[in-house]
Image 1 (cartoon, helix red, strand yellow):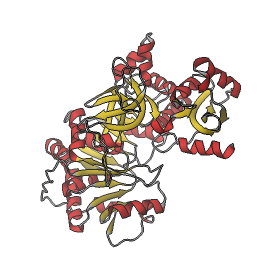
Image 2 (cartoon, helix red, strand yellow):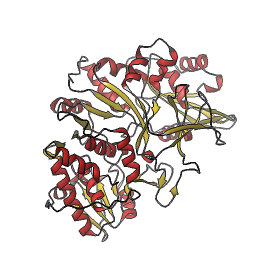
Image 3 (tube, helix red, strand yellow):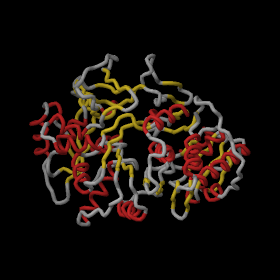
Image 4 (cartoon, helix red, strand yellow):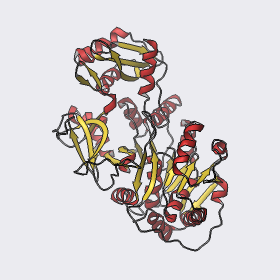
Length: 498
């Protein structure tokens, strides 16, 4: 089944319902389908084999996603925050292509004979012929191609087939489940899997999408109030900024319409989610854990889990607020380095299996093992009730004297100190032990703590091998736009200072 089927169903059932609001642009589901069909005709006329988007959030994103699906070619959104050489290297890898871009990014694209460029406004103004296009009914065809961040080499091209995305949407979303008044605010960039899944899931639910070009706490709150937003998705740093803004304004959120807020994309500090639950008591919070290669969410800590953990006196239940919940329509298995399956409470590598899991890269092929399991490269463990706790990326593990040390367990201890606002623990080369433990710490405004005090705190809670040999205090830690901490930057800063 082609993902364009999602739009076909919504346009037929609720064609007059508003689908997209982006600035002054507003499209109903019938208009979204007409725009996507017009885009498909333009793609077919161009001879392009990819539809590329280089732009911020706008109505062009959902039109391009479904236009590419109708035309039977992959949709490829690019990270507009990359450098000009990086952008053009990726464009060369998807030519011949039709490239949609905004005025702010047109100048970054080098001229090529095999890339046709169309301005966002012109793309949205294509003549909307009523002639239908039957999308190719090939569930194995590639629907979306997303380039990885490429932090350790050239970006890999992760591919998601129609069958993967449809399995995720149909398995997690009820068709037409949204009321006509419901709206979701979309702030994640269009080149991230969360941005794509927001379009697909909202379309299938027949929910109005309110798109914001970027994120700023006051602007996000204003948009939620203006459009009476009922649903939202945020990364942890975004939620932290909203909490800080509300606290600075006296704590009155004034968001009576907001009912559900999902978060993911990074580790959520416990203090942040607890404060958010206090500030927004009427909101159902959901922690959604997923990856590009799994078509988005694979585990969920739902609203009932949040409330139960916050209210419980049982430490086993309370700690679940730090988990990412239990798997949905997938299987999760924890393995050791040798590939042996581990039991509950045993930390190791996280593997996942299910029809929504692609685990495939262009030119590299499938990364699934013989049993269909995909290595997420995350470390973690399952408790006895099946809740998944993450310890960070496998590459972040510190190996000190042959002992594997998770940065997350040390960070959790340091964050319990009343003066610590943020922390990141990384590995540093060490002549004696192979690697040493180092911590970059951000203190709360007006608070103080000494290196010795923090080291003693870790020593009192964990083994002495976990005590950071190096601690530096910083004004802030480096994060990317999706709220993931840039540990490589911190490691380099330590290396430069030593």
